[in-house]
Image 1 (spheres, helix red, strand yellow):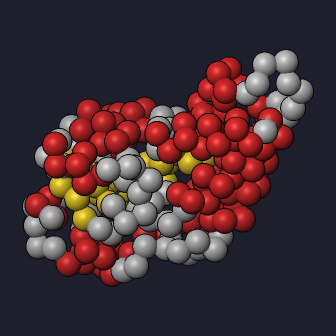
Image 2 (tube, helix red, strand yellow):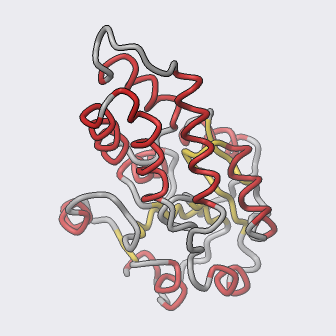
Image 3 (spheres, rainbow, N blue to C red):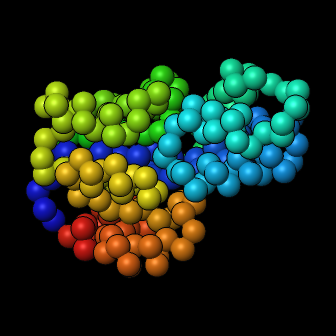
Length: 221
């Protein structure tokens, strides 16, 4: 395997099996505006996986919610969403062999760059007792992934060669735009037709972090 100096991980769908948690939370938060609007928000959320909740709820309020309909404001939507997500993240599955992967690559710096709320992520990772694995830091919204990656590169926290492990098209765009290599993690993704997408874009993929751990040459999985 290439001797990477830094691994950067997305959270939802890579470290935690939490994509369905997030989708259900978007649906329930938007439900006061009706099932159709809530379902449309979920579809928007899945299409733009990895984008922060702030941008998604702003889009919902501006473009999806029925006009002249009285309902929760954006702050109330965000609070409802956060409450439901927090509950789900405390119990969802952690990627198998995560700690073994950390032990195998003990000389490699680990970071999280997620679309999830930064403080929420740090609290959950501490609660799940995995925060110590990420010596490079745990970062999230309201900063975008592009902002996180560029800032940490500038600060010298991301050392090249660096590899990003993600489960969305946005993860691929943000990481390769920052000069990193990318592996798509597929088991928990919500990207439709991901196999075709990886094939036509020549994107390396692994089913999960356990498979990644077992491969000698991860970018060619």
